[in-house]
Length: 158
Ligand code: RB5
Image (tube, rainbow, N blue to C red):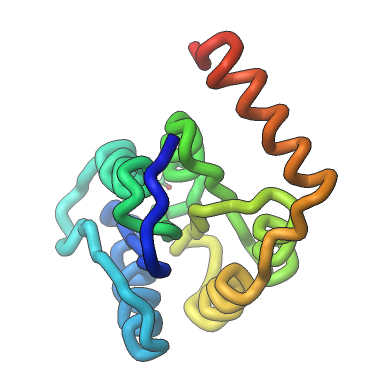
């Protein structure tokens, strides 16, 4: 079980394909007054997205961060990698609508974006929708418990 952090703290990470969008979102969040932790990557050198997804997932697992943002070229590699960690519910979002649903119905705690898919203006709209939407609970909470029961308590993912 992830430990509960005291205040909202947002981690960001990216590979070389998502680094520019990650930096833009980081600066936006700081201006918004959020507590932000930038886990890299910081340059243009080619790096492997699973390393950065794992780095961020561990911050969620440890309770050091409440939310995460992962960016790669498409967002796909990051979402596949992050969702291997049981404390993570990562959602690859391409619109404000999918971001709202990811929070309201899936209680997503990690937002994945693709820098080669989503432009900066739309990415900021998606981020705002993700930050502002509360989880609805109820039947959606039951379904999330079912995911845990079928994975953590049942057979591990191969
Ligand atoms: C890197 O070229 C690219 O494969 C990566 O950023 C991501 O899109 C993978 O899913």
